[in-house]
Image (tube, rainbow, N blue to C red):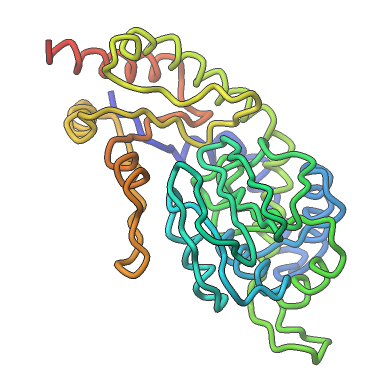
Length: 332
């Protein structure tokens, strides 16, 4: 049996009728950039998240970059080093200095802003530091609702839970000044001379596809939660023996990924790969200038993302569970 980590063909076939109709409609209308589909998506996204405003953008990375620009942050920005390098990169590219903290959450000095990162659909705690909070929610769609932070950043990259067919992202906010600034910045401040801005637009096709995906996103989340429940049940014996560690069962978690931890990560990865199961190592290397801190580095060296997408069948999941068990039985 061959099991992909994400099967893009299955995802397309699931929505084929509606996706094909959208593609034809967009081309027949000639609505390619910043048209009604983008506006409608922004309205739907803000309503879904529970904010007043949303701005559709070209990526989640750009969302973080523009949030910092909109808030005028120019100094130090605290963020966890247990994240993909895009978070750190956006901080640096916005002209700020990253202040990295480890998985114990300790920040040595008071920064000018804080970017908590919600990994794998699990919400991270937010420290009360009395500074602007920009949430990196690129892996937490559906988990973060009615936020109180100043800006939330989202990704709709194809591999994401609410992913589409290209790069796409967004910010949500209740702050009208932030909303207006980012809305204009993404399109070069075309009708406004206060800044130069840049090209950070979501194209209209991705917005139209997202309008389709949003109709089903709660069903997608429910299915991922069912898959997670089956993993917890199927692998609990291995965890009780101390062979693996399963992710926390946080209420409302949406399972962008299902991450297991084991000291035999590389060996298990190779075993599953040899048995046709595509898994991903959970390492997010930074640059030498901003190295990973010890707890995060160890965590990432011992963790593995196993298939948990909504198109995974019960039969395929049973196979994944059986092969993980088989690996550890073979080690006895």
